[in-house]
Length: 315
Image (cartoon, rainbow, N blue to C red; front, side, top):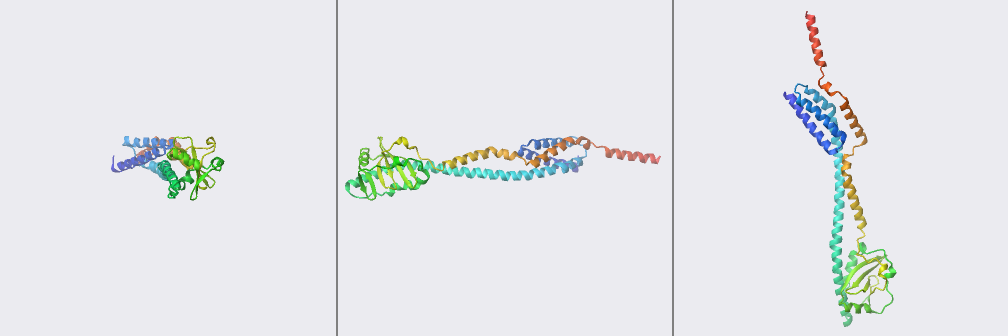
């Protein structure tokens, strides 16, 4: 094999490698079939050193190069599209992770701490009332609703169940505290557990349970009242508060699943007009009598005929 032939075969091999990579990327049956057909043609020249290698080069110029250029452009476009999809999935995941970390690590931890803080606040209120002094700082308990009320407190509830009936009370600065409530809190050493919060219109309520009892009480934040719950718990949702962003998070998770499931399909999908061109390309490859072109002996026949004519004329 001469230098020119070796160069042509080397270039042909590089073209095959590019075509194979494109076939693997698209996973499209027509592109795979074209690659196989092209590989067969390459191997014919690889195994038959007597063939005219210029015909292989001509074949690639007529067919392979244009196809590689077309598929490479489509591949770049699809890679950009896929990158955009991957970036969207990544951004969604970061938002979801950030939300879940904040919800679990912050709200769940704070609500437990809030129960203890509120217990201490109630104990201080009782002590101050017995000593007729005012040392308790309400900001120690008001932080919780300011931080979580808008996002977590339940917006659907029968507000009549949360509102108080008239009750005998102590007055602590601007706050009204039911006398019976303080008595029951004192019995249980002021140990309470935050159950859940409600945001009804612009009014916020917090429901607490007194430790080792069936008693519940309400902290009416806007009315500045603490009173025993006298409604029907069966008519209220007293489950743990959930973020009102949960629906958004669920939508993002569903969208990510859809994007992940379709990303390979996006890669394999070829524009309709390109698909038609590929079918025509493959049809031409299958219809042309490649062997007759490779082993075309018209040129040799014409040379021999010319030589015979020359000999006849000389005679």
